[in-house]
Length: 241
Image 1 (cartoon, rainbow, N blue to C red):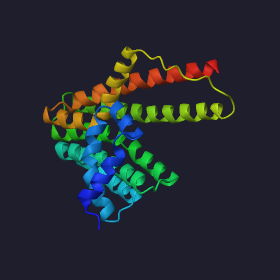
Image 2 (tube, helix red, strand yellow):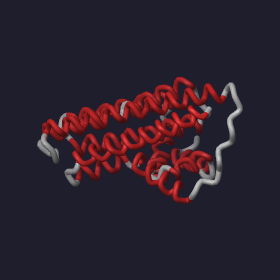
Image 3 (tube, helix red, strand yellow):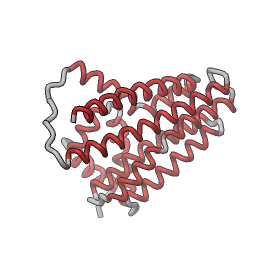
Image 4 (tube, one colour):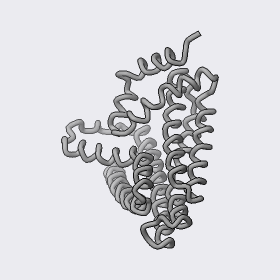
């Protein structure tokens, strides 16, 4: 019987040099979560857990983090959010290693990811009840509502643009994308992806430094800016088609 350590070694060997590793490297902090997930992945497989079951565990962990943040237990909530983030990598590892991909699994995985918007509002409320907010409690809650809305709206914009462009590409030949992107563009993109992928780590840091209010404010501005840019860019492409 293969030991958990040997199984983890097999998972790592499949990961090295794969497209998934190349994808993770673009997101700066993803390799941290990915390498943290390999041995827990082996333990889950040894325990007979499926990818969908692990996704359910991750959902429960995320909701527990939301409850902890909402109740004012900020560090506990931040750590649970980080754990849920790593679990999101574990279910993907299991699906790839066991060749158990399914449309249902992808759907529920995306739904769990979309629940991240609750983190911002829960953090705002938790700061207001614990007196750890930087601003007036009503302002903190307002910022939490705004960043939650912006996060959800960005999810909608991305889904809608992907759907519309996909339907057009299925009926008409599209010009190939230019591969000559400047190093400046790649550097800017990498910086943006670092901010996205660093959310759970930055939350822990913000709680440690009592800067949760600033965390919500900066992500409200960040996701707002990103949404406007992506929407304008997507509409521009659709208009030309």
